[in-house]
Every structure is written in C-alpha cells, then in structure tokens.
Image (cartoon, rainbow, N blue to C red; front, side, top):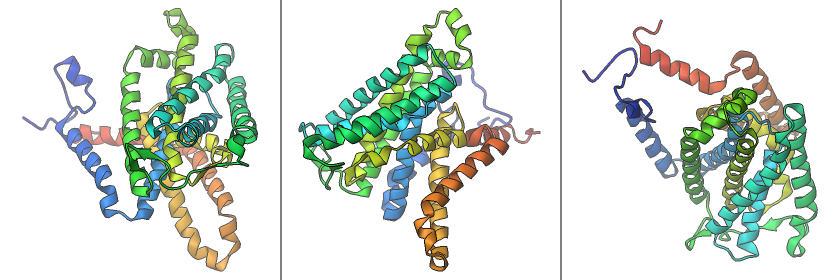
Length: 354
C-alpha cells in the first residue's frame, strides 16, 4: 500500500534519517527547486529584487541562527562580520586583482577569524556580558576600523565604488538583478545544505549540548571553549558569504550598509522564524521582507495625502518590525517554523489528527 495514514514509517536507520522521507516530500522539494530556478523567467524585476533581499536576509541570519539557535551564544554584532566579508571581497577585486570567487573565499575566512577574536571572551562570560562583547564587535569593526581607516584606503573619502561589471565570475559579469539572484540562490542553497549536514555531525551535536547545558556537556567530555570558538568561526564564515553576495547588488560599499540596526534586525528575523530551526531562517526572512514590501506599497497611496509619510517611512518600517517581534513573542514564541511543523503533523496524522 503506497499511502500509509497516521505518519510515515521506516525499517532502516538510513531511511529514518533521510532528509526527504517520502515521495510526497521529494515532489514538494523538486517543485520548490523548479520554482526558484525559473522565478526570473516569469516574474518582474521588482519581484526579483525583493527575492534578492530575502536571500541576503537568509544568509545574514543563518550565522546568527547557528550561533544563537544551535550553540546558545547570544550575538548583537553580526553585521560587523558581514561588513568584514563585504569589504575584504571588494578590496580583493578592486585593489588586489583577485577573481571574485577567490576574493569571496578570502573574505569569508577573514570574517570567520575576526569573529573568533570576539568569541574568545565567551570562554569566561555568558548572558548579558556576552551581549555587550558582541556589540563591542559592531562598534570597533564598523564604527571605528572600517569607517576611519578601511574606507579611506586608496585615497577614498568614505566608500568603495563598485560600477556595474566590477564583479565577474569566469568572465561572466554579475551586473543585473537576475544574475545576482542566481548567484545568491546558489550560495544560499550551498550554505543551507552545508549547515544542515554539519548539524548532524559530532560538531553539531556538541553545539546543541552546549546550548542546552554547557556544564553537563563539559562533564560528558565536550571541549566547550573549542566548540564555542568553532561556532563563532562558522558563524563568521556564513556572515562573510552574506557580505560577498551583497556587494554585486551595490553601486558602492559603505559603513552605512552594516549598522547596528541590521544586527538587531537579523536577530529579530530568527525570533520571528523560530530559534533553533533552519526552516525558521527561511520563514523569518521571507515573512519580514514580504511584509515590509507590502507595507511600502500601502504607504504609497497614503503619501499622496500625507507627503511627510514618505520621508518618515523608515520609522514606520522600524515600528512595524518591532511590533511584529512583540506579537510573535506573545502569541507565537516558537516562531513560524514551529507552526509549520504543527501544520505538517496535522496532515501527516489525518484522519487521526485529534
């Protein structure tokens, strides 16, 4: 019998731990891949640009999810490591003549090592003190080093110019929203698959053990300090990927692109999507991006009556985002990923879902 109600059952260990455990799920994932691959063929450039923002948000939040959701290390300065990845990649392409992919790899490694530097205090502190340490990373990296020193390399005043065609892959210029979309989609897929596999290894289980109870994990032989630093490194590498993906969409790289507000923003994304869930990263990024775009479209007709609303849209956006976080913490504290899991369980158990 091909259809088995009230759940899916397996007879082997490999089948029970497979990513896609039924033909129905495999079909859904195949349709998702086809949808993502063909989106630019039938969607407008506006929709593609919104998709690019969603993909960038996913990559930005993926490192925070690893560090906070899976290892229990709170961070409020993740934009600093995204900035490191973006600036090292841009400098590699502009000044050192490196191919974009080589510069991006270098940017990811430097971002990971820089993240480890600020992860060192996590060996002795946690909680509120760790929050202040990661915020210090934001202020030291972006507001001091990048703003006053890195941005002025080569006689520049404040930013690095990136005219169209600067970023190329094997002679293929990444100079349009559609090309940026395919680059971002490919790297997002690679990062999700890599992190999902990493979480199923000894390293991933050690991170989760530290998150749940670091004292018990240490008593069981887990080197807590080493695994915390490894989590900071992996998180920094993912941040570097986000920074490298973001620069082809920009005409210039500036410290204003990596402010503290973006660090807080991506923490809010995983709160809305669901802490400790890879699905939560995708759901949170899509939800926040789409809701804010809908809000922007709703403001356009109102701006004809209240012109000042256009100038103050930034404050409206921030207020809407804050309200969304409060509502989710009150009514859906486990995030969209938990609700999605409950919905799937209901249909898997039907007609015995009671």
